[in-house]
Length: 188
Image (tube, rainbow, N blue to C red; front, side, top):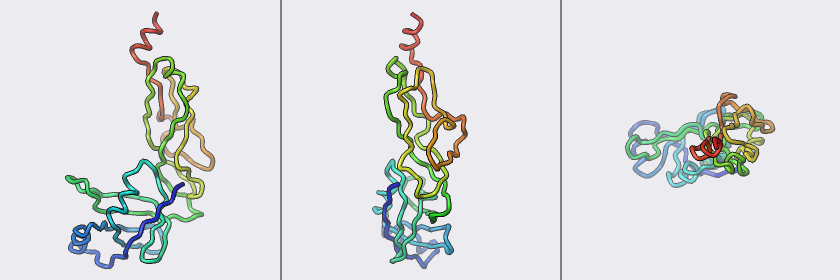
């Protein structure tokens, strides 16, 4: 899994007044949970944007005034009108403890059903998985070349070494739907 480094400054003032001042200076307040102590910090909004506005999932190396922590994004809070990032929460990860994270789905191949006139539909763009940080892939690759008209691939059919999928086993990940043109061709 890809890593990205985020620089942050420790935050000592935790009240509303201080938080408003940080946001005026284009700093985003944040919290790191999961370790021995809770770490409050601020980071530049620009720096966090390259982590948030991307289809990829990253392991974060959080550098808080020289102290480094490995983490993943746990929660984001946005302004209801402007969609500006207001707050970010990270969860500290350790090599020996499994983490739960959503990983993007990547489709490979051309489905037989699409060649026959069907429409490919990706129902779930991300799958929720549990595993050790060292075993997490950048994306879950699913081969769809054998997928026929009206067929689906469910979460229970997807396998990946050292990962446990937490979505419902019968929920559909990808399907090939029959189109009107395909139905008409099949009836003739």
